[in-house]
Image (tube, rainbow over the protein chains, first blue to last red):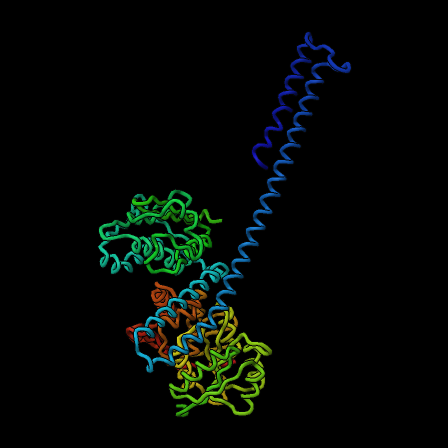
Length: 302
Length: 239
């Protein structure tokens, strides 16, 4: 029951009390309408008003619920359509790619030129894209293997994995994991997938930053959620691009010339949402970007 | 050891795939024939039995899965490598359960196909069901029951994650074969990813811990430095 339904009681109680008081006082209780005493009339008014309010709330709640359910229905429908589209695309792309790869393997020794090398590289790129698309549609439906996961360890591992790319570009990383009053609690999830998600986020932060920039990874818990922030002092994302960053294959203006499939953040979103978590991104151009990941604490899991 | 020039039947409804793959296989020393659908494949198999069949799953008329089922039902244990179409794990598990010797996800590196073909031919004992068609795999004190997904060591059930069981199943059905981390990742996940080789190492460590297998002196899983893993126990299949 929603809280606003309590308002229905208000006229009922008010009229009840008022009518009772009037009838008790006795001196001021004229017959006002249809020979009914004022006390009775007040009470009838109260009941009427309560009924009216109840009716109004009912209609409002009902139509809202109806609207919501159509919205949810159409969202599930869209999700389903999109998944089918991804599967079909995957299916239509992998046969030509298999043929091209076999053809290229045949050319192998006959044509050892730059051209062949670049065709090979582009074919590899397409194959990777197909694989990423498959990952995405697979991740949306495959059952998640939930175990206890130490996020702090995952963040340390991921930080270690990016060491080389950071050193080459000259980017400073600080990893801030809480120790007091207690360390980061365990979360429930698939360690492989969470590692993939945080790897993608850190990889992005480094990829889009330049020499001298700083990347910060902070993790803490707020009583209901574990929050991980991956922040950078990179170029930031223009405001008009922000609504699209989580979409598949979206690549912003700033991403031109930087390698990537445009599926990295989409994968992060799917992984975190499959873990009953949330993702957010805040960014200011010329200042930097921060991705905020929230994962439910074990006691607060839905 | 297998013949010098084994005959491979390549079955796929895309002529560009069969032509190019056949040409590549010939260049690497195989004899080849091709078929464009399941019915044609069954005819080819009857007329001139190949040493191995590379079989696409989605085909008109008779799909690869049905071809495989009919072959196995008729007691034909000719080695088969399935080219699966769907990356989903149940599909991969099915491929092994239905008696395919191995499988690959499209698109694949043709060199990987050659490696798979060689490994399958080396392992195959003509006329006998492959390990992948057995419901129970036994290696010394280790027993994997595939239908119930349970693993026992000295009759004690081991507590393993489903992914670790999947990994052990693939290792045990491909004994004495060097399996790269990428290949194992593809087996467990259906796709590779940047941090994946670590995920394989974690599962191997989980298996070793549970099976009490010493990495320095292994009974079951051997690490091949810089290359991958190999199941070194002798595996026996029971139905």
